[in-house]
Length: 118
Image (cartoon, rainbow, N blue to C red; front, side, top):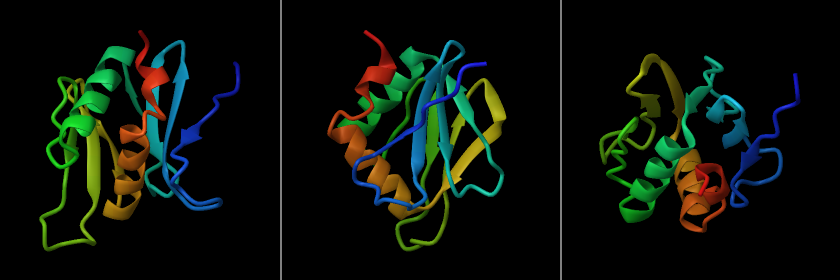
């Protein structure tokens, strides 16, 4: 098995836990390094591309076709942000708002576009 090379946003500090993305022959994978469940969500490049487009259009209303993001209520900064796929409802990547916002900054800067394919 080939090693998986995870990428995080350049806005995430060295040694900090962050949302990470990788690609293998099985698809595009999303995880969060401090998620206690260790969940790894897998999507097609097209579904990941839909998520990127949704986040670029409106980071607070990301509703891509296959991937969904559940945001905390506005007044609850400590509530977790959860990402799940329509086809795998039991696999949920959990992060906090600060780490998610750092990931979105990278998305909006185009740092993960190559995972979406052509």
